[in-house]
Length: 441
Image (cartoon, rainbow, N blue to C red; front, top):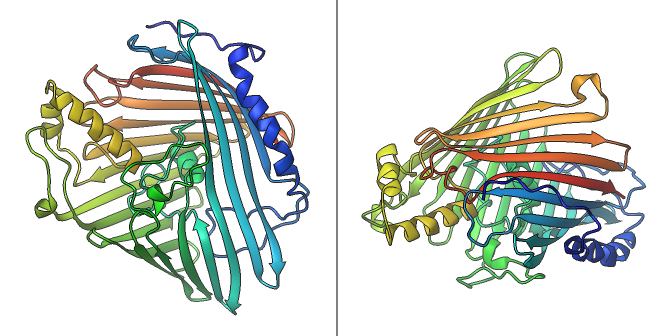
């Protein structure tokens, strides 16, 4: 199937379900009026919220057409409705509650007008925060603890595995933002000399399968093993930032990580993210792996971002995972026939859930241009991820028109390129075009 289908009108029946679901949940969000908005979720440390009259709600409606590489019963069009809620509110002196939730409803339609749909709620964050004493803060609950300076790959972001439940975008920044947090107790110490953070995660599930029910909490994704994370961030000056992380999880070897960011000039930012530890390599086509195969491997994301004088920001990165497949090992997988082909599909699905690399080296580039073409309301962005072992690539481009403070209109295009047996060239969807409307309340 090589025809790119036109986006369907909003009034068509297959889009009725998601908007109605959003409308049904709107009163729940309106009840949050008067709460304080969340601070920047990627900011280091604890920040006070600014006063804002908004409710913390974001509503989205999507229409998307897909160009399929082969006709195998897959959907050719989809409609998506999203209700996104983020708020915090104070409950005492230095105390606050934080809630972050995302409900998505998706309906698919194929060539024979066969319709199918899915609904999924992701309780990303729900925690209580208190200032125990000057410079000390304690948080308890479900927290989306993100880390890493890389734009396209974060080897030191140890809590990313299995945390994404719905992929409305392949943008790495969106995946970090919309994933499930882990239940933990976190202590933070902030000082003029730097900061320290200790998070302890209990085991809350022993399920060996993911629960895909609409209202599932997903604890088997985030708290299937007990774990602990320690991060130290000494103050190093205005242009240099560095942190050191140690991570331990039941049943796995300890991992170490570090992030370094250096503002070389006012227009050039250099970044390096590293993680190292003992782990098993990915299985080859002729052999699996066991705990006996574990050895030390390094993972890296190194890059630079340049802010041009005329507006666009260009970022380039190289990604490396020593435990991933070598070029020769990947070539052997590509020529394999059944049943090895079935095992390869399971391996790729597992790597997608863990957000790990299939082969050892990738290139990543991103171009962002806010207020593009001297238009204050237009933002343009695009990124590409390329597998250097087989030359395949995934591309995504997006244009957003900010019609007002509350309304956005966006156009998104994705494309995967490469040989039929390559990583991205084998994807069942060759390209997508999506139009979406976003409202902030």
